[in-house]
Length: 70
Image (cartoon, rainbow, N blue to C red):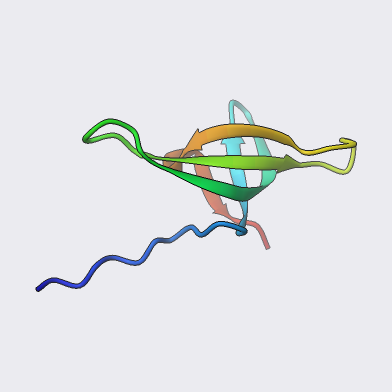
């Protein structure tokens, strides 16, 4: 039986999310699963910015997550 692949991204991870021309620091808050049969994985993220009173939430495709924030 083949071994299951480990997920690269986990809930609670801090990552960089590419939205348009802007890269945002974000926290993964929910794994929404795959979009359609051959689609990418969807994640709900909280955008983090010191200028915001509260985080903004959006959903992104895994390909929009550029790299883990350091």
